[in-house]
Amino acid sequence: MPAPDWLRKRRERDTSADDASLWQKCPKCSEMLYRKDIVANLWVCSRCGYHFRMHAYDRINTLVDGDFVEIGTDILPGDPLGWTDKRPYPQKLERDREKSKLSEAVVTGFATLDGFPVALGVMDFNFRGGTMGTVVGERITNLLEEARRRRLPCIIFTASGGARMEEGMLALMQMAKTTLAVQRFKDEGNLYIAVLTDPTTGGVSASFAFAADLIVAEARAAIGFAGRRVIEQTIRQKLPENFQTAEFLLEKGHVDMVLDRRELRPALVRLLDYAVDRKRLATPLKAVPEFAIQ
Amino acid sequence: MNLIVEREKSLSELETRLAQLHERGIGGDEMRALETKVQELRQDFFGKLTPWERVNMARHPKRPLASDYLGALEAFDELHGDRHFRDDPALVGGFGKLRGHNVMVLSQQKGRDTKENIRRNFGMVSPEGYRKASRLMELAARFHLPIVTFVDTSGADPGIGSEERAQSEAISGCLMTLTHVGVPVVASIVGEGGSGGALAIALADHVIMAENAVYSVASPEGCAAILWGDSARAPEAAEHLKLTSSDLLGFGIVDEIVPEPLGGAHHDAAAFIGRVFDAIERALERLALLPPADLLDTRYRKYRRIGSWREDSPVRAGGLA
View 1 (cartoon, rainbow over the protein chains, first blue to last red):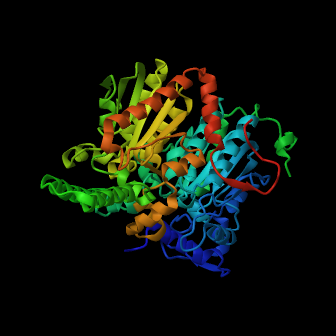
View 2 (view 1 turned 180 degrees about the vertical axis):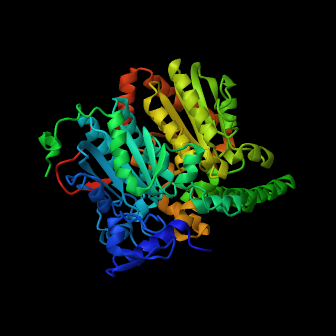
View 3 (view 1 turned 60 degrees about the horizontal axis):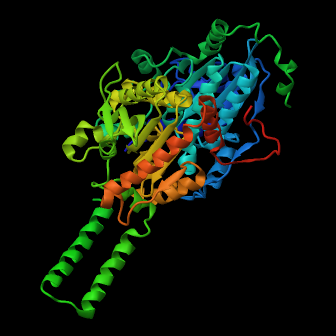
């Protein structure tokens, strides 16, 4: 059986991420790209527009005004089920920490976006496939609660294979927890924008991702509830190429807009400008006492 | 083949033979010893079930289905459709009367035979089913009716049509509705609680679970396929997943377990359903005392607590405002 899409993409990334070589081949059009150009082009192939998956901190650094303050770093994974298969769960976590340079599958914090103070969450597929365990649920919930307290808009970038198997039902319950937090946050008139990136599926898409006021999908991202392989096995036939892509979802009416990564930042700023009163958020972030955490 | 059904078969063969011996007037010590042996075997088979055995019990072809619970209500009037696309027969909902309480009932409905299973999509709910559920929950809230749900599904439907009609949004929408309806919500996991498709109608103030029901982040087959690329390793996945009622009570994910008779709920379905109703009734009466604001606050706190993580710093970054 050929490797599923997400796994193939992960392998592509694995071979490239730590590669210090100057050149990298675009997996889509096979163009040899100068690494510095890829970075300058926001990890998009300058020839065919292929979107490489982005590291959470690269995403943050290229998005905000350079003033990101991270919260939730003290919330770290345990091993509630004492899970061991090929290797113990804590070892898997340790390996992913080293590989991804992340403490968990989501980074949360505050920053400004063209002067707009926002609460920001960015998931990363490199850490356990972006799966939601209790730390992801707790950090997202925490972010929404802190944003609500400060009446800040919240933007969450999703990238997830779904719920984390190794935390069992405790992982599933994060769907309930995060959705409750979204409801409270929205109920008080705060704006929540979800940016769905490649891939967004399962327990994340079916909870806080699709509960957003505005849903933006990044070009060509795979987005859905069930994984492609599961559907193919169920119906015993191959799915069309564009099935569960951002463009497919736009056509079916599931998302507000699909954007090329290079158009994302200005578009988010425009959306904030339409929905949020800049004057209400006039206080510079550094003047908010709780914000100056570090 | 179902593991439990297999055992029931071998037991019933032994019992038939015993009965035949009785008829022929054969008795004595040897006979009594044989009878004791059968009893021991029954205890051995069903007394202490492994997680995988419970999965089989939850899928037993004779296990009481949602329709059996609905049939035991004093009254039930089904309300159909999501008002957008179609009526989903895998999600049955409507007004009901339970021990004199007017309630809104929502349930996942598997079929008893192949024909009904096809019509009901094996209890796998499609987006329109979840949208119907959302609609009925909102209706319940408008008329101050508590919401009572019966969960029995292997998971949400994973088909092309469901993806085209936004299964994720439908489940998320159902959860969002349950986060804000100001009426008591009591969920009972009576068979299979499969992943987000089950949780969509089980975000509740009080969660009841049948002793041999299972409730899991993914089906054991799905989990084995995801982690090891081999769905045949489902029994092993079941051991890992902590999907039994006692595990989940320990995690605070379910609030109450309703014990089943030896051999499973189908051995005395009517009495078992009665005990589930007893538990629902007690929860409804307790929750009825809470004003809506307190109810919602308690619901928030209940789920806010669930999880397990370690903190490196003694100062929590978040928590309830």
